[in-house]
Amino acid sequence: MGNLGTIAPLIIMFVLFYFLLIRPQQKKQKSVQSMQSSLKKGDKIVTIGGLHGFIDSIDDNKAVIKCGDGSRLTYERSAIREVIEAAPEKAASAKEVKLEKQD
Image (cartoon, rainbow, N blue to C red):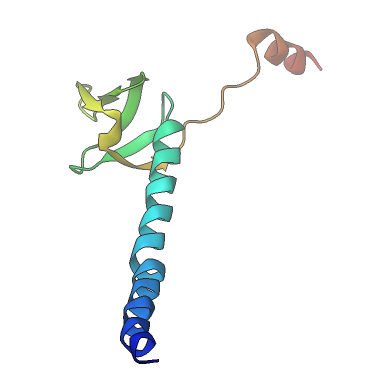
C-alpha cells in the first residue's frame, strides 16, 4: 500500500501531461502535416516568418511563392504556416465549358 501511495501522484501527473500537453501537440502537428501535403499552386499562404503570398510552383521539398510586388521567393515546404485561401478548383475542360455556353 505504501508504494502505491508514492507512485499514484506520478501516474496522475503523467496522465495529466498526456491529455493537456502531448495529445494536443500531436493533433496540431498532424493537421499541419496534412495542410502542408495538400498545398497546391494558387493557394494564398502565410509563412512562418510572416510573408504573405501565392504559391507559384511547388515540389516535394520547396515552394516558390509569388509576392505582391511580383517577386518570386523559394521557401522550404515546411516553412508554410497556414493556407489563408485555397486555390479555386480548375473549371472543367475548355470543351465542356463551350458546351455549357451553347445550351
